[in-house]
Length: 309
Image 1 (cartoon, rainbow, N blue to C red):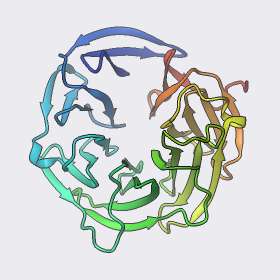
Image 2: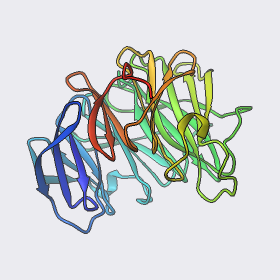
Image 3: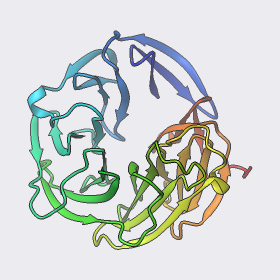
Image 4: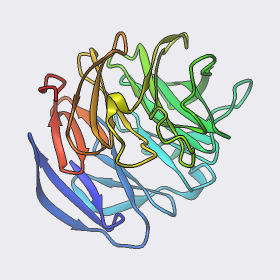
């Protein structure tokens, strides 16, 4: 596992077991605000978002970077988000109310026609590929409201609009809402979104956010679950963008917050237990590693069978 430190000037390589152990520190230069890495289940590429754009590094040589040409990237670099296809061939890049998919081998950009759908968010735009690579889910926020867009991905990376899901009568979480994380079930059939309350709202005792699970094909709502402090614990920081990851068997959904992990039943959304891990900033999964959480106590391997607190 690789993490960044000192605003991306340093890459830290970890060996991860029950707890993480640093095995290498790589200096890659300062002054670019490097964020990441973003990796794929397959492939050797690691993507980093910088102030200037997006760079690709390989596991075998972390010191060498390949910078994606500016003409391949969508406009508006601030708040840029990226996600890899499972095979590590396609990179989704979102910013400035646009989403594109880049074939990093052929250096070809694919856009989606706006058509009849709502477009993409400029406050937040979070892309995520399904495990089979056929879907690209995008969580959006604009002017305090949120919605979800499903795109279909061709074998060549071409994009086609699927549907927009809007919250309808789902209770919003108070004030402005931002999409923080998106995750698909392992069988691709459903997709979860975490929507949290943006900073600046005077009601500090309101809910943290809401989890929403919808059907990947139809866009129908499966369940939603409001998360408040009675479940998550008193927040250490606000806002809390959160992280999401399903267990490999698809039975549990992990929500990572500043107070630890909330495990939910993936079928019903009912909370199963909470785990005090330290603040969680990201999850990762690969068959050879299992589920990993990056926490303030370092990276660690996690399992929903952990002892409840």
